[in-house]
Length: 335
Image 1 (tube, rainbow, N blue to C red):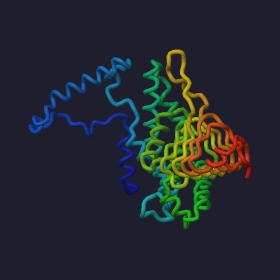
Image 2 (image 1 turned 180 degrees about the vertical axis):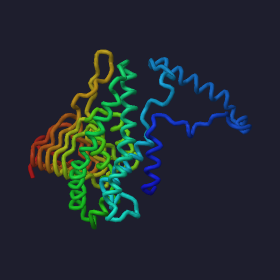
Image 3 (image 1 turned 120 degrees about the vertical axis):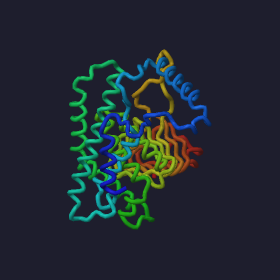
Image 4 (image 1 turned 90 degrees about the horizontal axis):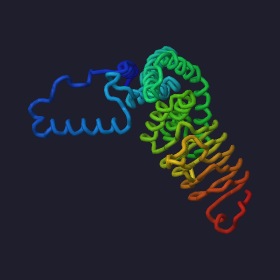
C-alpha cells in the first residue's frame, strides 16, 4: 500500500460509523440456498440474549461503538512509516520529500487515532453510565500527548534496533534488523501501545499489541514496562505479562515466558485485576530459549537464565542458572 492509498484508507476510518460497506437490500435469489432468514433470526436471538445477560442495551447510539482493529492496523503502519520513513515508508519516497511525507502521514494517522480514542472513551462511559460531556476534549488531549511523545519513542526504538544488530552475529546491518526481524516489529508496536496504555486507552493499546502478536507470535502485554536496548531474538512463542518490569540491555530468546504463577480471586471467585504478578528482570540479563519465569520474582542484574529453566524463585545478581545446577543445588551459582 503506497502513502496515498494508506492516507485515503485511514481517512475512511475517521468517522465513527460508516455504511459504505453495509448492504441496503437483502441478498438476491441465491440466498435461498442457505436458509438465511432462519440463520439471521437465530443470530439475532443469540446477540439479544448476550446483551440481556451482560446488561448491554442494543442500538442506543445507532452505530458501532467499539474501536476498529482494521483501522488500528492501518494507523500503526502509518506511524511506523513516519518513525522510520526511509525504511518502513513508501518505496518511492525520496530524502528531499521525507519531512513532507512524515508530516502528512502523521496528520492523517493522528486524526484517525483520535477518532478511535473517542470511540473507546465513549464506550467506557456508556458501560459505566457516565456523562459523555468532555470526552472529545479528553480524547484530543490524550492523542496530543501521544503525538508529543513520538520523538522520544523513536529514540528508544533506535536503542532496540542497535541492541538487535549487536546482539545477533547473523545481522548484517541495522536496516536488515529493522526490515526483517519479528522482534523489532513487536517492540515497535509495544512502544506505541505502552504509551496508549499509560494514557488511559487500554483497548487501543491491546489491539495494537495483538496485531503484532498475530504477525510475529510474540505476545507482549502493553502494560509491561521495558527499558531501552531490548532485544528479542527469533521471538516465536515469547510471552511477557502485563505487570512485568524489564530493565536495560535485556536479551531474550524464543519461547520465553515472563508470566504469573497464580491468579488471586476475590470472595466471589472473580480474578483480581491489576496486582503485580509478573517477574522483574534487572539490567543486562540474558534469558535463553524456552525458559519459564513465573510470579513476582526478581532476576538480578547481569544474570543468565539457561534454556528450558522453570523458575519461580528470585535470582541474585550475577547468576548463571541452568537446568543442571538447578537439579544439583538449591543455591544459585555465580558466574
